[in-house]
Image 1 (cartoon, one colour):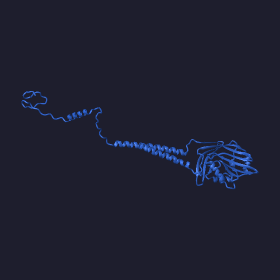
Image 2: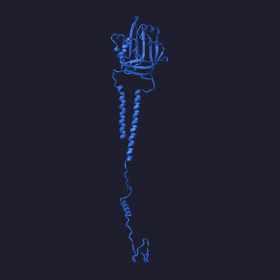
Image 3: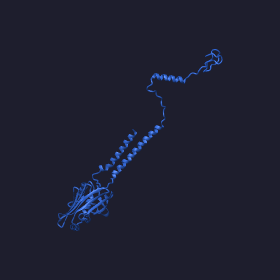
Length: 312
């Protein structure tokens, strides 16, 4: 009984710890956003279209960052995410990754993700896109992107807006309209980026794959560790209880075992047996005898008197 109670108590503790660990994910504030990508993951994009001449011309007369479009058709870009860290006092996340272009290692890089959509909105207004990443946003993606559009100042609202999970920048140059559209998936990763000028798409890049390594997330590692520790505690407690009970039994004095009569014995037989046993135990001493003829003391085994020869 003691072991069962201990087991139930520890089981309740384990379940409580699991639920407590899940609480932040369940009851998070809708105004607080999270990073949707994982450490030790790999993301691959491919350039579908790139009109280098038109891109070079457009970028030379605008404030768009050239590095964001400096690719050729069929180029593949790969990020191998190494770490994700939070800089709470500056209100951004840092995504550190190894950068590959056409499978050639270009070395480590890092990007900052704005915790507050308003910070990204202000960066988009500068059209330099250098303070915060346009490759990643936070989740819930649609809510975050929608907030970016809301936070754009009134001056830039005709040129920068959001729709669903997309951020669109547009403007005109030389009488022709150009627009830049960035679509994000549910993880907050750039799914597609398109640059259109004079009604023609001059740059397009799409996400091809997102893969995670076989390493378990930290949350599940903690849960598994807690379960292992709890199982060890249960086993140890059970062993202590069992060994304590055995030790107590050994210390108790043993009572004499009463002789129980046979179940087949009748009451009368038991009485006779008891009488005979008592008679055998309490035998009366043998009295000294003498010869009736001459009075000589009789030997115990003699049949005739040793003095007068008379027969006893």
